[in-house]
Length: 457
Image 1 (cartoon, one colour):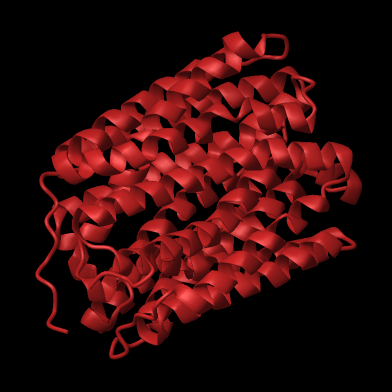
Image 2 (cartoon, helix red, strand yellow):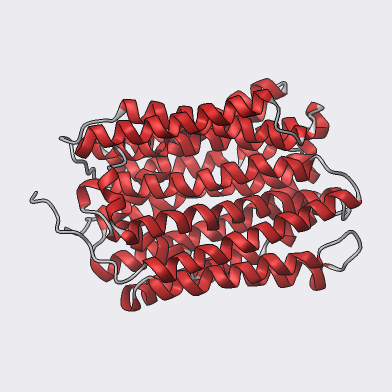
């Protein structure tokens, strides 16, 4: 059944998700300024990102499931409000400890608003209109990400890094207003919450990310790192056991992985978005620290990637509705891999147009072929009672990939001078390999994605 106010529903969902997209891209550009002001070491700077990404990836599953249970609009508004309060706390943080605590609160808010934004959208549209709406959602979200780096760079240079968090306030207030007055509530009240699954998933991600962050900053696997990795792997095993025992009551039903297509989408998302998150974190840092770019110029250097994605994503939403997701999700990551490889041209003295731009353009073209088809395929793989859970799970996989990449990227951030550029080149090659593998995964596992029979309502 179509929503009474579909365009306003789409607007609210776009504004809500844009909060998370803008915040991620802006913060990457501001890292050097934050480090200088708060006297943070490279290892501590990693946690400016990880403190946000860890609760975001760990709690996305329960955030989506809670929306399915209590109401997607209700949780959407709650997530936006929490994110807004946390943004103000980031802006006024007096030291690194307070900033990290506020960033963690931001991550919790984003973990609530993101899956419920997409699930609300999936509930409001049907058929080909859903593909177009998701394409628009992905495209405008990418454009919001495009605005983030140059806007953040200008704010950092002109006012200071604290100003980047105040940008969230007007966007959040408009999103809450539209959601309260024009977005219809939707839920599946009989679906139980999976608190044991949420706890074990959070424990697993926390232990693994903490251990990888220590490894990348120390450049060695010592006893502490080994214990952290072992605890994380054990928690992953416990999470899978808990989810298997809970059956249909699990927030990540293990039976979903009986579908080769769903398993393929999961692996593709982890590899591709992990590679993308790592490179997008490192590139502005390298340009500022090794290339002598200002924060504003580093922001503009990233502009081709999200801007190109935004322009093409709506078109890809329509194409996917007609041809299916297999070929876009095969070809797109291969083009992204070429873009990562082209970033080997980046060094201290190379001009932007012959070093950064070719890779950025190729990544933009490739990711434009992925964003909308991937989202459409994931929503098409479950019935309507689990759209929040499915979108939350896929978002969690994407953020987990980025989280792990960010933890490992500390090895690059800790380097200096020529070593920084060389370490970045190694990271770009790893990203290229991961992107190519994700494209191969799509080709081998994705046939025609059909929506399961929906449960009677």
